[in-house]
Amino acid sequence: MAVKVAIVTGASSGIGKASAVALAKAGYKVGLLARRADKLEAAVAEIKAAGGDAIALAADVGNPAQVEAAFGAVKAKWGRLDFLFNNAGMGAPAIPMEDLTFEQWKAVVDANLTGSFLCAQSAIRIMKAQDPRGGRIVNNGSISAYAPRPHSAPYTATKHAISGLTRSIALDGRRYDIACGQIDIGNAATEMTTRMVEGPGVPQANGTMMHEPRMDVSNVANSIVHMASLPLDANILFMNVMATKMPFVGRG
Image 1 (cartoon, rainbow, N blue to C red):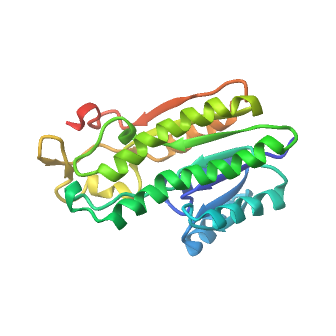
Image 2: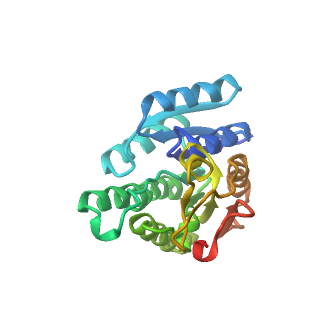
């Protein structure tokens, strides 16, 4: 069987880790990329204990040199790259937009948008030059690519921008057999969403606070494996995977 190689960003926990583990179980050799080296090493050890093959790539997706080095390490080890899940991201404090600092805005843009661009750029360079040529990129868009939560301007703006990046990669990648799609996730049960079911809950569009239903993160991981497994002449451009009873349109 031909070697299948994937990189997952934001892979030290949550959606990224679950997706990396699922890809490894599906037969991919996986590069796990994130900033927290200790968490990455633990995730890699878990994959290897289950019989998979993976490496830790400690890097900041917003740093061009670190991204280039990480993707170069994967190419040097396995010779190619078939799949990239651009998952790394962050939010800013949930405060009025006028109270955000420039540094808070820039940190979200660097992680969510610039990071996805840099990783896609490195992936494309490998995919268009390898033999067999081509590959697939999936960007994590989020429900926030459609509808904002209160006080989420940086996160929502970058996730809307990801939709444009997805469409651009899907268009420009055609000639090189590179497919690109986007997964828009709503309320996956991870450490980042525990506030949805604890304490007062999360802010709603009507000004109230409430708990929100969540879904198991395995639903996201299984969807990523499905998208990755398609032949390159087929593409899921956009997929919503969300808790059935969560607020969505208008968030209220």
